[in-house]
Length: 308
Image (cartoon, rainbow, N blue to C red; front, side, top):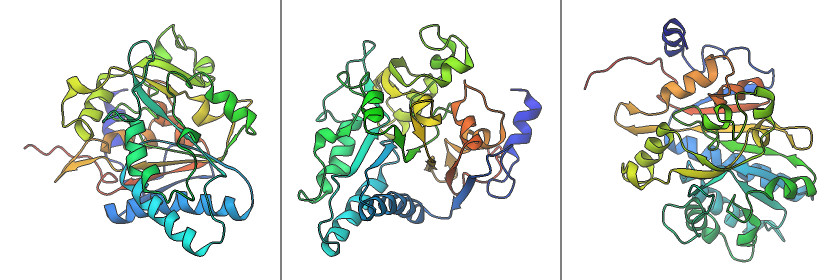
């Protein structure tokens, strides 16, 4: 990206300056505090689950593991609703988790391994739900070694419609773990844009250095050597949609703050909103489709150089 474009992008005010050529049904929401942000994220999920229950239909959603705080809030919301809604349960909810760490062969950890996405969701969501309302643990679909190649067919057999894809934006502009290798490697798209858009699952994709550092920062106590080098993940087709799988809406949530006056996600969100779509920076496609990006302050502010 030319230096002049980078300088232009980092001066944008998210929520004030409109995104570059957005879809008419795309919006940006800026949240003032972490409390409001995570409560709103959980309430968005709650609203969709309850609406589908009353409409007597299945709800299909793809979700990330992180951010994490909204998962306990969601579980509490659903437990409280079960007290006042007769017969309420989650049997109609189909959750496809975006990704799971793997080794270079695509073998994934078990749910009881700390640091695995399965462990995080089990502890922070599934175990927090009342046992009489929750779905079976096996009905939360992670791209494990056993399921990574089967998930698209499961979705298609279930009707082929994803009601909402929740997500975040990586330091290197990924969504899910769709890192640069997905586009640049002959193993995947070989720099063919249309081929990239049709990738449904990525097994044992090698993670970018930025992805490893990002996950080291917020999960692994800054120990980059502890972060697995590969992952199984959904591909671009399960975010963008394809000829067999319809994605109705994309709801992305960005909270990348790592301390007083420090962020890791600020420039990534700016680039996602104000740069041309680029398969090496997958999140730049989000604004071209129906959906939203939710941003926690101060990620919305222009980027300045602050020596420390």
